[in-house]
Length: 152
Image 1 (cartoon, helix red, strand yellow):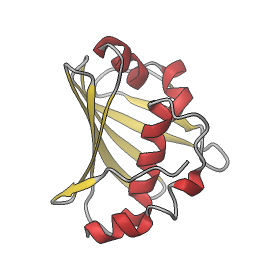
Image 2 (image 1 turned 180 degrees about the vertical axis):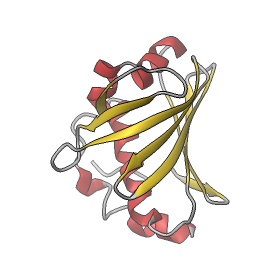
Image 3 (image 1 turned 90 degrees about the vertical axis):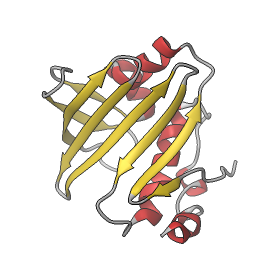
């Protein structure tokens, strides 16, 4: 399977959009419940409340590393804003839902440097969320790298 890249840049915001054939409550659960996030991104532990920092274990990265993630905003079935805190510093993402179960995934970049690897990574995770069966990361990286580099 070869996926087509879908991301776009708005300033330094990388935006990827997917529409799901799920009720909005089910999509929200896929984005927020640890047993469900484990299927497409990774599980998490802690107090899932705004202002809290949770521990996230990435399911598809080498070594399945853990990192901290702060919940900046949580507006059920509408908006989830998070700041990832890892060895490379902090990075911010925002998941915006519309009533028709469209997800706009926004990675607020500080620079577009490295977008050639960031974009394909998010494409991979969002396809896992969408239920694409056993995608190969090789279909995303380096395959999508030229598309994302051209966005700069």
